Length: 277
Length: 277
Image (cartoon, rainbow over all chains, first blue to last red; front, side):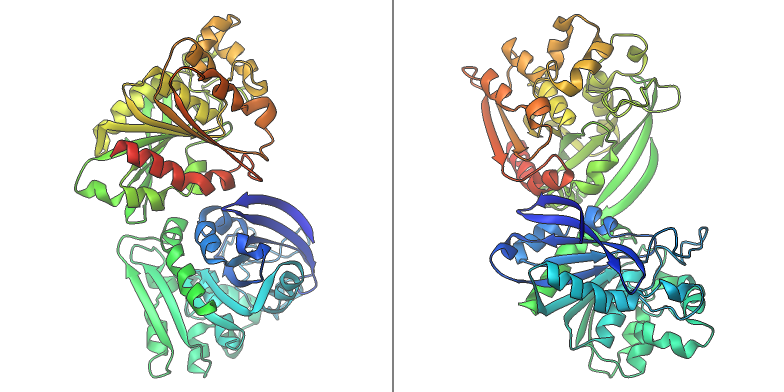
């Protein structure tokens, strides 16, 4: 593990690290906040998945999670959103595909399949690596994220309900297989057969029988992507009759930015901490 | 006034604005956070001055001041650290001079004097402008800042004790006229006669008779600039016998970054709010 930076914050430590990823066949960077409680005991871990165009750094700098994580004793891990590096394929003029747009799936199509194995990376390789290097209680894991990362958190929770005790999202893409900004990427990563897309689509997963006990979703009503990209009403419909509990909060005047995320970050951390206690 | 961006945050509004500055003879950008309380009443205003290399954006993105400002009902104004634009002189390879390094003084030397009038801008022009456009109670003003901005806050408070009710600083440059990273800039901005430098130096101002009731200073012990640039013990010495009250808190493990600033931001906002009530 390479240590890229370490800064004391709120009595704990905000670090940025990198390692060679087997799954993505490139060096991957991630951020970890370790609260002061980890000095004397293993702590629950909360995985934060970021949105399109982001790296590990955006939420680390703008998400305002450290104060409450320090209070609640949560380790926060913020992975990158895609593989990086000169040898990794990309579409330079398309922010919805390639670097910064991994969609937390395992690509099957050429040339993407070689590196874009974000599902395996996030669910297998990174947890094993973090578990080795940090004082994490792997029996107490939660997952959350924003936008594309909200999609990642919800699909990963639905596919791994035994592993995660809690899941929440800020403005998630709940049905990427039909959303404007993801259909193109899904086709390139996964091929034209839409049956293969369903395992990476929260609404389709629920319709196909996947279950998770409960979700918290915050969504701004002034979010430019609400109507064509996010559409939380689709997950509201999909869960009807399934027993899945959804707390969906729609907020006047809030947009898609980190100003929105940080405004409700405390609520999400408290939501998770309660379920990870 | 040009509106560059507006985002809802913590029930209030974080905006970025620009205007044509008479003092600096160029367009100047600044950020304002307006808490929800300003809907129904004028609010106290807190001026935050940033450090070397920063614009208005660094503390806006990384300072984590909005949650507590919304709770306390404080308007937070974050100006830029220097004039900007193609016609403004600069030293491109020197981060301690020119753009991003205005040192909150009025330059007297060629070519800097034409635009680098940050003292006048911060103390006269910007307050008048903000007072026109925002619901500010100008009888309740506080000022704080980081590093070069801590220097700015302390010198401005010492020179205008009738205007500011409160002043605090994160890792301030308390004696810039003798600090490694400011001597060169002071000579270029103000000329070789060091008598002219004293009005922009907190320690010298105190020695020359300037007074402010009390300062709160937080300083990290792992700050790389502590020994040669910041040296808070100099202000501790300077205020002896003056009646100025100094709360100086030295923090193990904290560095010079925004991880340090954000960790103690709440304490500073509460310090000011109490005095601005």
